[in-house]
Amino acid sequence: MPVDYTTEETGALIEAILLVSTEPPTIDEIAVGTEISVKEIEEGLAWLEQQTDRGWLIQRHGRRLSLVTHPRYADRVRMFLGLDREAKLSSASLETLALVAYQQPVTRSEIEAVRGVDSSGVLATLHARGMIEPVARLATVGNPIQYGTTAIFLSHFGLQSLDDLPPIGIINGKDGHEMLAAAQASAMATETADEA
Image (cartoon, rainbow, N blue to C red; front, side, top):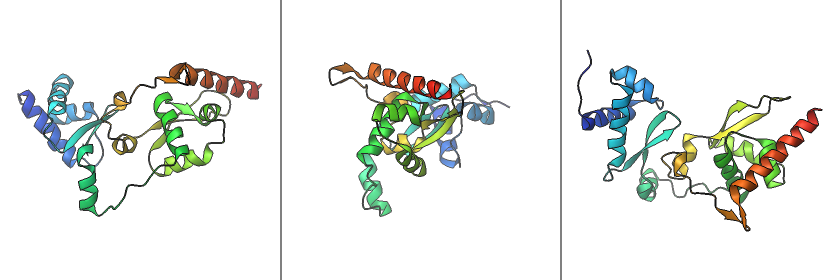
């Protein structure tokens, strides 16, 4: 039988569910499992996300939710866990990761069109570290893998969702979005020409 919760009680219930979940649940799964409407779950989440005095954040990866350590406590948490230093990402990894984050879903050839170098090794490393994952296949000959970022990516950079990515802005006097779109179109044209 459905229970009538206040927004704060719904938020606390969501928090409890996220603490015991072995995998990040979706908003719909929480709604079905608690017999609370999706609208009320969203309201509870909004309340939770406004709480600034906690040591964690609600992280959204698509429709999936998880609790993650607040970035302001990252140093102390690493110290407590005995993790002396965070694994650093190379400049090639950061460059590739930025392309995936801003252009996802994106193929290897689209990334290489922007970077100008073979990126298969960097993509394999980022995949092995759990920062990116295959999310789809492009509907062209060869069906190349399209990559997207993961919840680990969000946690690593202290983001609650992809909406928190900073704007690209101007690069060498040109609009960054336009440059990426042009490189992506060029890669697509090359893939199409290769198929012919």
